Length: 211
Image 1: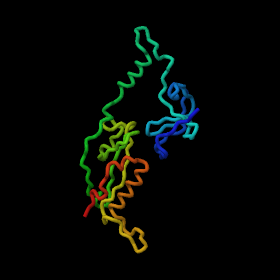
Image 2 (image 1 turned 90 degrees about the vertical axis):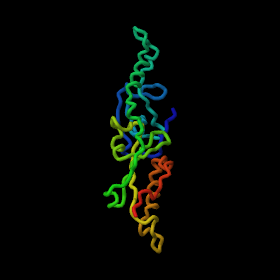
Image 3 (image 1 turned 30 degrees about the vertical axis):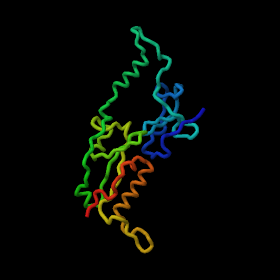
Image 4 (image 1 turned 45 degrees about the vertical axis):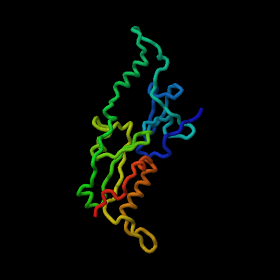
């Protein structure tokens, strides 16, 4: 039986919950076979069999549905399985999926004093879409008034705002003083290995630089 692949090549430990156990009635394979045993989950919403990911063995799990009851109607003619699925759908909190309005972000006096600021982002799971957030929007992800944490994965980066525009090098071409542009460029490139959509924002690497 063919194993399944994860969406990403690499996940941090914080993005994985390992060693979970189901005794049935929770998960099944995509071929509708009920799964009983150990499994693990990801913040991306992915669920796989086995306590940890085993390449060639772990398989995708989906929420369990009693396929035996599909097309079975109760005494008043309602398909109980389909009706249950509808109940789940209509109870979804759509407010959590609303995208925040664009906000003006600027460094605080504290940021200017220390020479850097935090910038906050959220990437929509399994989509090439990323948005910048305010600190409040970032903190509200997963709350009633914020983005749905199942649909959006948040992260932050440190953004340099004080210093020369470009790196200053010594006679051996080693960086003597890190430049604002070059530092922020490196930060974005490193971040893009995990969140590639950040490159689509075309960030200005000297944005917020202080003279």
